[in-house]
Length: 361
Image (cartoon, rainbow, N blue to C red; front, top):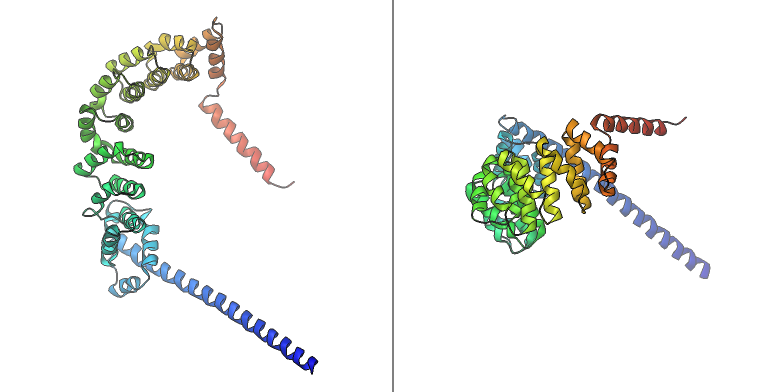
């Protein structure tokens, strides 16, 4: 009796185990089939949308099939395609997204009470276009992630008003937002020059000088010269970088004066600027900076001299016999650096050695 009961228990357990395995493998098979169907649907959707991006009229039935896909799948296809298009194709992508109803959804997401949903909406607008009626309102969003994404969107959709608003965000308390604003302004490029110039003339934040240096418009030179006389050392250093990106007689004169600035960051920025401009008349002053007490200044001066070509190299070699050990050491370090062709040859040799190691004997 006990043996029969035990046998029944074992058979029940085996049956349950077999049933569980059937369910498990069945579910795995269903998931694999669903994934295969989704891949096929995504590939078909990509073909339909790509045809629209190329200027061909998409078939209404095919677009209807794409519209029946889950929103996440539609967004995925648009994001994949949007990463490699611009200009007219970017505008067509926005038209397709509007036809599918995604822009209306993104606008509703941007008005959500949840910051994650708002962020999702701005990201979609950033990738596919549109959003000019709703995204600018998010510059003042309470969450920094949303503000940063709105700033990134503006880099691709600049208007005079939005650029001016970006400039006010240079004082955002969150570093992420400030960096995104600077990057967006640099991507806007020369279109941001006029409002940026007005911002600097009104005594804007020094971070704007970094943006101006990235754009390097000659109209910034008067502002750069003015900021070179700022009582704040960091501002003078940023102004020196701006002057070094623009050039001209007045810029090189200001940079030469800043080589004697009491702050080492400013002296280093001035040396870098003179080296960037290739201003060989300043070679003597740069050679004197090899004796500077700050390592950053000595390095900037040494690299600037090297960048001047033969005159700078001659002064570096003379510095090898200088009575100042700092000057001798920095001159030796800079002269020992490989030039461009040597660096390329070293990289090729390193890659060749790595390739030989990767091949078994």
